Each structure stands twice: as structure tokens, then as C-alpha cells.
Length: 241
Image (cartoon, rainbow, N blue to C red):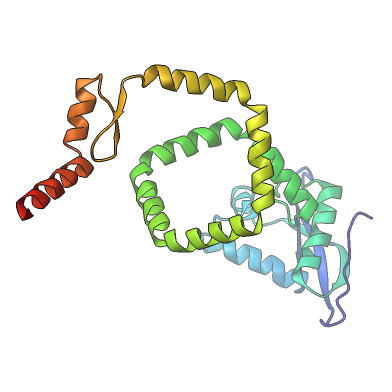
């Protein structure tokens, strides 16, 4: 049959009617379900059309093709919840394939997952562009939130990281050892490049390493907070002698 029916013993069963609406030509068809009498449900459809509702395809179709439509019962079922009612309606939607119904009455978890996967595959490029625009537009806001989060959780993260290191010392040691062994050539190359690039490096009296061969590097260091603070300490110490 294709319908999974769940009988929940904790809920009271009630009767539902799956119905169809069609016009004289017979080519236009709508399928719905209700727990009311069909006459009452049809009167509700006509009343909704007259009050100007346009949020359902059926209402718009009735306005365009007239209120004098035919309706009839497809089948009645006993259910315990609206979800089961929608399952039966979807079952008959699949059989009759009415052209007026635009949406599914029920989506199973499997159908929902497949629908979402297909939608992501079909809209991957468009969604990436939207995300890119959103990130660029909200870059400053996101950076501010991230900075605040990292500041607020600094102590908590430090405790968690220390706890992890203490409980995974052997794993961390083995992981670092494997990395060093598999990247020996890269480490050697980077070391040579560093020594070549920093052959004029010296250690200042304040303890900071600087590239003495470059004037801009010297000036940047001499104006740094660390060097300025060291100079003030030196002057203060000399004055006290």
C-alpha cells in the first residue's frame, strides 16, 4: 500500500475523509482530507474564497473557474493524529497526481533527507555566493563577536587545554614524533631558509631578537613597548645609584 500506519494506543481514534474536487471537464483535480463532513468542508472552502484568501492554490483555482465544482469521497480511515491523516492524504496524492495540489501533504524522514540533499546539490554554487556576500557584509560584526568569545572563554579554554594535555601526554608525544619524522626534509629546508634570512639577527639588551642588518627593523624595535620600558628601567636604576 505504501503507507506506514502507526496505531498509538494512548490516543483516541477518529474518522477522517479523503476527498477529491473536480470540475465538469475532469482534467483539473484536487485532493484533500478532513475529519468534518464533506459538505461542511466544501462550505468552508467556498467561504474562504469569498473572504479573499489567496494562500492556497485551490482558492485561486475556484475563483478563476467558478464555485460550482464537484466533490466526492475517496475513502475514509480511522487515525489517531494529524500526522497519520496527512499520510493517507499523501498516499492518494501519489496515486491520483492532482494538478491543483502544489505541495506534499506529508514528508517522511527519508523523503525529507533526500529532498534536502538534492536541494543542496542543485543550489551549491548559489548558496556559496550568498554565504560569501553575507560574510563580507558582516565581517566586522563576526570578528567582534569572535574576539569577545575568545576573551570571555580564555580562562575556561586554558583549563580545558591543560586538562587535555595532562590526560593525553603519550598521544601528543607520539603525534609530534610522527610529524617530525614525516617532515624531516621540510623542517631542514625551513631551518636553512630561516638562518639565511636572519643571518644578521642579534639579541638586544632588552632580550628581543632583531634583524640588525635592516634599518627599519632596528627603528621599529627601538620604538617598541618592550625596548622603551627597558630603557626607562635602566634610567631609573642609574638615577638611584
